[in-house]
Amino acid sequence: MIPAAPLPLQPAPAPPRWQALWRDAVRDPRELLSLLGLDGRVPALSAAAAAQFPLRVPRGFVARMRHGDAADPLLRQVLPLDDEMRPVPGFSLDAVGDAAAKAGHGVIRKYRGRALLVTTGSCAIHCRYCFRRHFPYAEETAAAAGWREAIEAIRGDASIDEVILSGGDPWSLSTPKLAELTDALADVAHLRRVRIHTRLPVVLPERVDDELLSWLGRLPWPVTVVLHANHAREFDANVDAALRRLRDAGAMLLNQAVLLRGVNDSVDALAELSERGHRAGVLPYYLHQLDRVHGAAHFEVPDDRARALHAALAARLSGYLVPRLVREVAGDSGKRPL
Ligand SMILES: *Cc1c(COP(=O)(O)O)cnc(C)c1O
Ligand code: SF4
Image 1 (cartoon, rainbow, N blue to C red):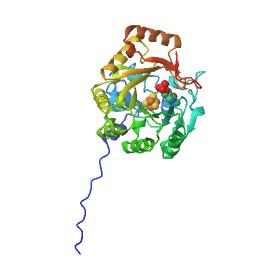
Image 2 (image 1 turned 90 degrees about the horizontal axis):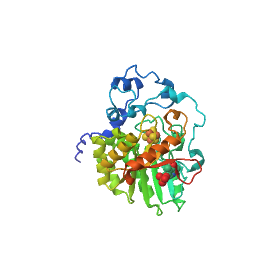
Image 3 (image 1 turned 45 degrees about the vertical axis):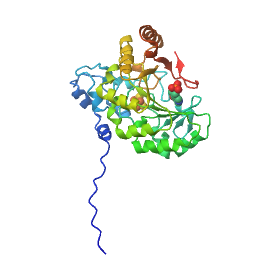
Image 4 (image 1 turned 180 degrees about the vertical axis):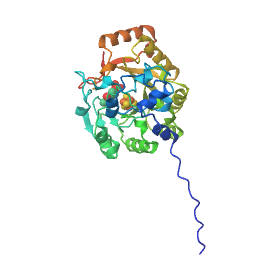
């Protein structure tokens, strides 16, 4: 018998590039300030806030911040400040009633026809105002239970025709993991639409790679991708290219933003956000009034001012460039218009 020649050593397949960029995110507040030429110039920086909800921001997003500007609207979204540690009456840990609406492992079922799947707790960026910064992710994600309970909860309710992949950020999952989930959903006969709530194409556009696009192109339902950008300067050429590829793969692109004091609480900033998004093929969907979550009070814009900004925006822009101004109220049957 002729001995088989030893197999040539197979190089391990290289992990996707976006995962390396993900891991390389800035996580030290002092490093972030130093990259922006702001060493020692932000006195309200809080180690306690960073310990509670760590800083995380991809370097490509940092590159879009203005050097030397401590009030930069992108920086403000990620920098842990003393303000977060002040308890403010009315701001709580479960501001949107998620704990009460859980219908299955990682499934949140609040509105008719729609099931929101908490696919993962991970995000490439940590937004200080995040409405789920206190959500008990570790126990509640659908992936943790191997999707089974989540899929069964959806299969068992024929009134659900739309599944929303949310999180965290669903695209922080590897593409094979996403395919596992959508393969399981594919034989739920009553599903008509899939929606993906993701900030990744904006904060880490490299995530939109060939593997993701080929997965997207194979999905058996119309797909809507709801992005999350709060300021026009979050878009750049890399983001534009990623969004074009998503559209080419057949996805409809919408954007939801959160109205944030010191970030986008002016008619100019909101108009520029809609116009810049439109240039990238994205229509505005919602402008959210902040969820009253502990640690985010310093971002709040009073309702009267929010309404005035929204009216001024409507007076200025084409109708389809005006997002709906809404608030999420626990127990409501949908987002509540202001
Ligand atoms: C916001 C949300 C939805 C989607 O609501 P739309 O108005 O259809 O965008 C669905 N489920 C939950 C739990 C939500 O919070
Ligand atoms: S990307 Fe979305 S879910 Fe993640 S921290 Fe930001 S707002 Fe929260």
